[in-house]
Length: 168
Image (cartoon, rainbow, N blue to C red; front, side, top):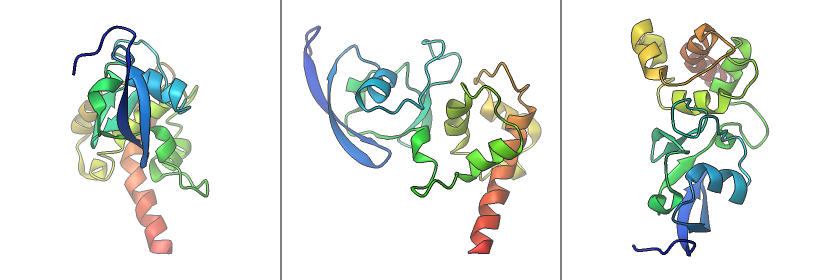
């Protein structure tokens, strides 16, 4: 598809299970569309070059940096943001609850990206060796926690989820 500078085209994005037809210019980043057009401000923008990981979302099942993706490239993609984690009744996702319990967040700026980066792997985290888990979580910059609380939180989230299932 050839798009002239300044011309808008409509792309269909499934964001948090809701399909949106969004008019975008070819230069607009997914992070900007999420924040400014869809009002999903949980996707934070830090470095704007993909190094910090604050803008991490899930695209078609895999963590991706929203500040590096042009929205126009994502026609038909399934995107999940941090807003998708908590239940409609406000109950926190096991990852969110675990981050709270293990002090995996302090200022909270990197937390949405950390959560989305961990979402595809937290069920396997209890069996992963520390070096493997830390490698899987690498590339996310946090200046407040020292990372141990984040590692502990990701490792413990599956247990919290299992406890909830057992209580039902």
